[in-house]
Amino acid sequence: MDMNELLTAISTGLTAFTATNLDDIVILMLFFSQINHRLQKRQIVMGQYLGFGALVLISLPGFFSTVLFPRPWIGLLGLVPIAIGLMRLLNADTDDAEANTTMEPDGTHWWKGVLSPQTYSVAAITFANGGDNIGIYVPLFASTTGSRLLVILTVFFSMVGVWCYTAYRLAAVPAIATSLTRYGNQLVPFVLIGLGVLILIDSHTLEDRGLAVLTLVLSGMVLLHLIRTMGQAPAMLPSDVEKS
Image (tube, rainbow, N blue to C red; front, side, top):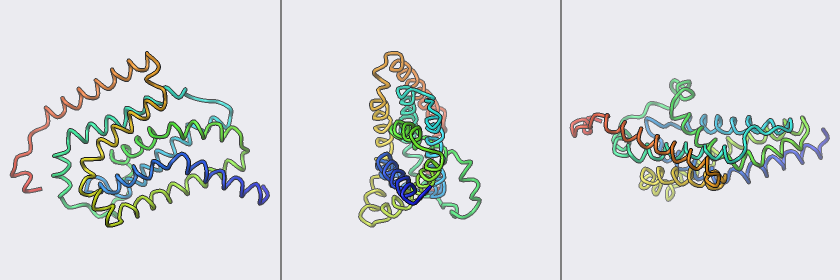
């Protein structure tokens, strides 16, 4: 690969990543504003890499001129942020109480971040929000050579780190941090639910009658499960809140 091809591949990777991940900055900022003993910086970064890696992996068959799933089926992933948003909305009081407890130092037991549900939640939301990514990456990979693909993927995964750092620094800006800290807990569930609805609409999932019925059934099952879980959870006594 000569210098011109290298520069072309780099610019292609930068353009494709930026165009498909601008909305991730907002989501990442919200995540970083919610850091407490349950959600830590490493879990957000690892989740972002896992989710984006899954998007790239499912798009790679485009390099071999194969598409795994039609876009309306991919749109069903919009149920993931909806379910997480509903769960956080129904458990808002518990999350606020637990957020006041002491956070484990971010440098200890780093491997727990890979195995934690919080990491997989971030990864699932990143993946679910990637319908447009797949739609662009599949034809992009299909039209490139092996050496250019390697450069593009290197740019992609480097930009994930840049995106995480940028979102973290923006969330630390005093004016932004104050607003996110004050309203973040209340805002995040609605942002996630809205994100899921937009994914369903943008992927034309609801235009398919069968998928629309499946979406309603799955949504109802998730909601019933969450309500049942809330009903079975023991109520937190005032003394417990004070101790926490």
